[in-house]
Structure formats: structure tokens, C-alpha cells
Length: 615
Image (tube, rainbow, N blue to C red; front, top):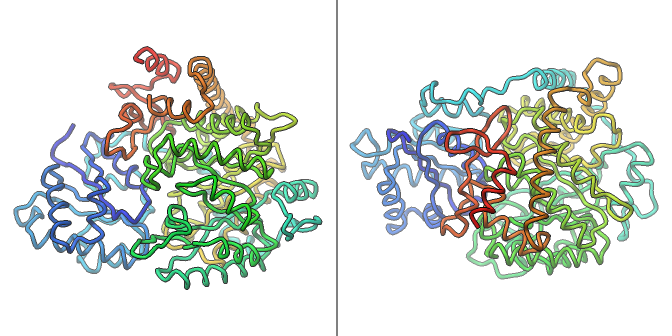
């Protein structure tokens, strides 16, 4: 491990975005440097750094860990970001903590929205390394002056398939043909827009009309004034309903909505998102949204109770449950892992009584925390089978592409196809699966025209998951192209949907005419798919044969706690789950694999047997 650079990563606690921070930390580790991520105590102190005790705490953390590169992240409001960073930066400079005045900090960096980066560049006279979000992994490392020989050759991900999609997407964006897209025919069935409307009714109607996919998008304004925020969001909802482009209104609820619903919020920081705090506020949104269907996040506690509230106040289109996540593991809630799992299983039992679908919001949360591609697949399968065994009749399978963002396209296809194949093997007369695809959270460039091209190119990738199935994907979660820069307003949301629909139409036409290769027959993709499917299948069989009561809260807790589902980026400051963090992963051959101490891949079944032998 190199000692000339020690990277310290901090962020105000109110900002729950951690993926970019962990990605960067892992990149510098793979180059041989130490990366230290601050604890919640340190991150909380950043929110009021002007208090002497808070500053002393942060300063001691920097000194005790010999931090040479202080890396600050904040993805919320640009003015808040600038204020938080500058208060710490100026305090450290005044205290002679920078190397120019005899201190240990050789470099300061800031990662956040482009507007925040611009403000900080102006205030610091370009003395801070800035990461507005469009950097490739190699570009990020180069900004830290990491020598080229230390950067893994595997980070070079240029390949023919990805280049083809980018070129195809550029033509669509440059032609602006997407601006002429008209709404799909999704509203002609009898229950549409009524209190009895359901996702399954809309799916069946759209499928019969040959008018898939169902379109979902997730949005919400930021405003520190709670009532103004809700008023603004209701205006957005009305505009989106009038557009008739959106099927599923996904409410971007705030952290407090998820963690403290119905409570007194006085003195609590809300962070970003729509600050809904009563069933009545949900009901108003539901009425304004018609004929759209609505959905929202689950809670971080009292999960069954909130599921019932969402059902009664929103006629929620489907329930999204995170199982292992949004609790003590990621700092999003106070439930212990086992408490969270028990509440989620109980919530599923309630949801079954409503007949609504369930979306296990699971695989990408493992990927956010450094899990390998096989763990991504296995975690999705385990959650899906648990839902089936409990009695769920319709499953929404979310597959987040571009996670991490340097994953190459054929690996994304292989990973998605392997997971889809395993889970569709569960289908029978009482259990069906809808594939929902989406772009990765940190995929988009801060250059908005380039981001439009990326949205279009990723849409091509979605269509190639099942290239000969005209009904796949059944749902597209459209991530709005402005996400790396600013929150998407209704006009950007509608434009993003139009780009998606136009790309699907043109890409399918091009394949039919032979202008684009049919990825169903691509040898490399099929080879990778078979490898991932076989490895994941063997590992699942091993778990089912060796872990008693696997598909229970206790079973899910057991396999996590003992490291079967590795999450090397987990923010486990109290070391409750050391075995979950003990396995390291690395980017190889366009994807993520578990590696041994010599940086060589470990086959999953071999790793599982090793774990069992140690128990």
C-alpha cells in the first residue's frame, strides 16, 4: 500500500448519496493507495463546522489518519454545497492544515453538481480539484495525479458494441426526430384513471395494443420550505398528467418522508425530495396524477404500516421493498438488519392481500456497495423467490444498467439476461414477472447534449436484453438526462420520455432492416451470459441445500452476515458485519468480480464452500 497519498472522503450527513464516493475510494485503492471514508459522526460534524467541537473532531480525524487528499462530496443544493465546503476549506486553510503552510493536506477536492463546482472554482480561484460528474474513471484518477502505470489497464472499456450504440444515438439526438413523438395508446381500458385502476390492467391493455413499454419516471423538486415544495410538486404532477406520456408517477419522496412519516419534523433536516408527511398529502397527489398510476418509496421503519398507507392513499401501482437495505447498513434508517428483513417479509404478506405487484429494490443496492456481478444476480433471484414463496403473484424485476458506469455493454446484457433467465424460471400459472430496466444512477454526463446521447444509447441496451421479444422491456424507468446537473422539471421529463420512445422505435426498425446487428446472436454476449448463469445457478443451489430456512428473514440475515453476499464498500463503522466486507472486488474484463489477495478472480461456488468450512 502506497503511503505518499492517503485519501479521506467526507460528506455532510444530510446528503445520502454515497455511490460516487465509494466508487472513487475503490478506484484509488485499486491503484495501491489508502482510502478512508469518514464515519457518520464526522459527516454530521461537517453540517455545523463553525462549532469549535465539530471542527476539532474533523481536524483530529484528518491528523490521526494522515489524510493528504481531502475529498468532499455533496450532491444536493449547489448553494448549500458551496457553503458547507467553503466553511471547512477556509477553516483548514486558516489553521495551516494545507501543505503550502506546513500542514499535511496536499490537495482538496470537491464532487457535486456542476453549478456547485463552478461556485467553488470561483471562490477558491481554481485551487480545488473538481468532479462535476462527467469524468471517466481514468480521468478521475488523472486529476489526482496518479501515475499512469498505477492505473489498471482494465479500466479502458472502449468496444465495438458500445461505440455502435453511441453512434446510433447521436444521429437520433442530432436529428431531433424525438421531438415529434406522440403519447402511446395506454388509456382505453375501463378502469383507467379510476380508483380501481391497476398496473396489471394497464399492462394487459398496452400489450394487447402492441404499445409497450409502460413508462415510469422518478422526480420531485427541492425546496427547503415544506409546503412550497408540495405545492410545486402538485403543479408538476398536473403538467405530467396532461402530457399523457407518463404511466407511472414515481414520487421522489424525501428522506424524512421515508424515515419519520407522520411525525413532528421540527429541527430535522429534510435533505432532498418531496417532503410528504400525511396520507392526505398523498391523496391529493394521487387525484392530481390521474390517469397516471402512482408509486413511492417504502419506509425505513414501520414498513408494513407504510405499505398500508401507500395502498389506501395512493392506490399504489406496485410496492417497492429493499429487504437488506434502507436501515443500519446504509444509514438510511435505524432498523437493524434483522428487524428490517422481518418488517419486509411482513409487508409482503400484507401486499399479497391487496393483489398488487412487488418490486424487490435489491440488486443495484448491492452493486452500489461494491458487490460483484454474480452477487447482483443472486440477490435479485433470492428476493424474487422469497416473494413467490410468500404468495406474490406478479413481480416487477428492476435491472439497473451501467452500474458501475464503466461496465461494458455486453457485460450489462449478460448480467441482465442471466438474472432474468433465472427469475423467469420461477414463472408459472400463479407467478409472473415484468422486466423493468433503467439507466444507472451516476451514468450521465454533465454535458446535457452528451447526456441525451447516453440516454438514447442506454435505451438501445435495454432493448437488447430480449432483442426478439417485442414486449420487452415491459417497463422502462426513464432516468432523466439532466440528473447529473439538476433535478428534472416536467419539460425535461417529457423530453427524456420522448428520447426513449423514439430510440426504441428507430432501433427496432434498424434491427429489422439489418442495419444494426441482432445481439441475440452475439457470441461474446451469449458466452458471458452462460458463464454468469451457470456460476449463479450453482451458487444458488448450494445456498438452498446448505442454509436452513434460506427464504426467511433469518436466512437472509445469515447469508449476509457470513459474507455470502460481499459488499466491500459497506459503511459498517461499528464492525457489526466484518465478514460481509472481507471479500474484495475488482473491475475486470468489463465487469465486477470477487478477487483473492493476488487480485485473481474467485469462483463463487468455491468461495461459498470456503465460507461454510469456516463456520
